[in-house]
Amino acid sequence: MRRPREFGRMIKASFVVALALYVPLVIVAYATYGRGVQSPMYETPEISELPMMRVIKAATILPMIFTYPLVLTPPEAALERVLGVDERPCPRLCRVGLRSLFVVFTTGVAILVRTREHFGPLVDLVSSCTSTFTAFLMPCVFGLRLRGIGGERGVGRLELCVNIFVIVAASTGAIFGTIQAVEALSALGGGAATR
Image (cartoon, rainbow, N blue to C red; front, top):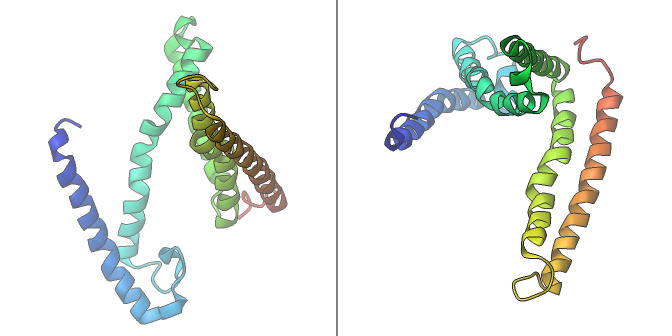
């Protein structure tokens, strides 16, 4: 951001625009259709084709499209370093090919999970495999590794027991979460591509 001091104004403007788009629609939709309003709201048949609904869909989708390169650039760059793309005969061509594979992969995932039935289990799978590690396991492991066990600055017995409990509980949750998500995705089968 060129002028970080303007960040606060930008955030406030974003909230105002979001409220201006959503609040009137929510009030009218719930006042008119009551419990007939579906979640997400744009799936309610009576209002799905309204011009305001198209604006809301665009306001939801466009930021995702524009942030796609920001989100994928770090893992792409890391994979390029691991694969030694810069040392290859045609580094630019290799980079374009690798980044194109990323786009194909994410497009394939988006096609597979385009229905609500498939999206939930995929998020569960990703959370079981990543969030558990970043939120629970790694902080405990790194804390124990950095401070050590025992000694003057080391971790005491109670703190060690708490860390071990968190590691065991999180690992168990990750295992069961992964199994459940894989079973849910397997039960759904390949039906995502046909819907």
